[in-house]
Image (cartoon, rainbow, N blue to C red; front, side):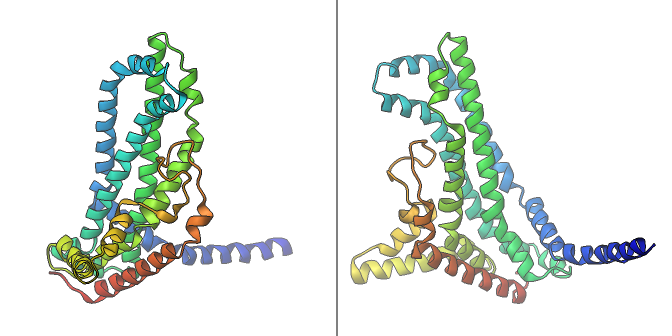
Length: 310
């Protein structure tokens, strides 16, 4: 009896604590779901690009056996690059789509709800401005990187399976194809590249667009570009240099000097690439950028709290 009486209060206490623990994450969860519901292009655009690439690759499969026969007599490096080409193109297409979708989403995230005046409804709900802005920031920093990685991996596996089927139908060996494509290593390299070069490294640009999105009344891209162009123009006139423009451009396209690739000119999903994450994570420029991004996010929270509909 004592055991049962002691167990019952503990179970009741656990039940009373559980809703409180869940209540902190539930508003964030629904705010994130709202973002995906209202901005369906976030996942529709990558799916469309992946489908178009797959259709284009199916057309090029007609020439695959002849191409591999032509490369079979060349040096191993050229043969390996020929095999890796469609996988690198697939990754390049998806990462380029990720950059474009992220830019458009960040420019629209806070501006759209002010333009259609839906901010009045969303502010009436018991969801803080900080939770809302963090949910919006999770799309470029969490949702899109994981979606891009998953779609790129599916594309590359599809390319591998379709290529193998065509080679087998042409009475060619698929052994050289599979031995030169360590899928697991390529996938890990690709995930590392997406999270570092296209999520962490350009974070200041994405958060700057979120900040301007919460302030501008129209043409968010123009207002976001004016300070950048002004600073770059003053630097060019005064010092005849273009360090700021180069810095912004490198951040935008994911060109990361402290990334730690060796050699640096190899595509990041190439299985011969070696990465040094410690070199990247210890880079002062990375953490300066993260600090600037956090300041921009804090400014976006402040603007959403005080800015009304347009």
